[in-house]
Image 1 (cartoon, helix red, strand yellow):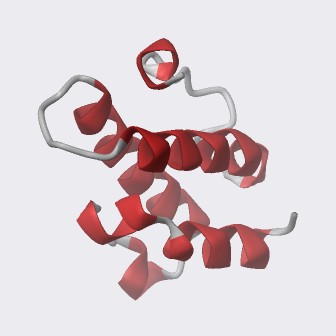
Image 2: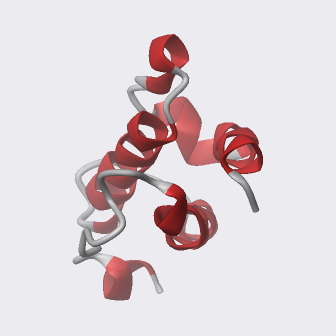
Length: 84
C-alpha cells in the first residue's frame, strides 16, 4: 500500500464519516490518520457509539497505514484490545 491508496481506503471507512475529516483541506495522510485514531478511541471507550465491525476495520487501517505516516510511526494505540 502506498500513501495514495491509504488515503483512498481511509476515506472509504465508515468511521471516517464521524471523524473531523481534517485531511480534506490538507490532503495529508497524517491528518487523516489522526482523525481516524480519534474516532476509534472515542468508540473504543464508549464515548460515541460505533459498530464493532467498523471499529475493527478502522483499527486494521490504522495499523496498515501507520508506517506510511510521518509523525505517527511510533505512536502507541492504547485502545487496541478494546476493539479486538
